[in-house]
Length: 266
Ligand code: PGA
View (cartoon, rainbow, N blue to C red):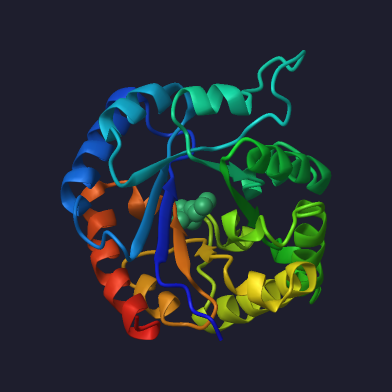
């Protein structure tokens, strides 16, 4: 089985940090992880839209990738309130989060819309980070795997096997996210990641599927980050609350990277 040589770690700061907070967070994070793990870590931060310009200036051409939390799927047009891929490129965004559970379940986005955004991101050279995950009710009903397969097959419709390596997929069970979330056990998370991997193999072939980084998200913290990354198919972590202080995030990173390299030796 081909193995990824890097671990993927990122955070989305949701609707929390304004410009000053984002700049100080990024400055602190950059200082702490600057030259560490240069070939073995893809690190990204996804702050709110209004902070992107300042975030880009703070990060310079450094090693932390800058992401956007959402994106419209047309280059321009009559889409009041939307931000186009061209606008994101203009401020130096490299990665775009698509279909976070709060977009799907609070703002009512559909798999068809996520698909338009994935294709649009690929067209514009942005890395699409597609988030998938079942609700608590779907888990109870025993249909988590079906939900994941539908979200992937609809969300990635029209993506070619050649493009697959540019994708990132975050498995974020809705019931595990946020202040009321319960973290998934590492066994449960790994099984779902296995389902995601086999669905990607159906879509793109086994080789291309292995090259897609799969990240777990949902109440990742200092205690469960290493046990999660040790599991098969978990190639990275997508962290909310526990990453929002630079010092703690850097501490998690410094534990997760060696644990990943132990699992996937070069
Ligand atoms: P959390 O958020 O780590 O605070 O649960 C995860 C997410 O929403 O991506």
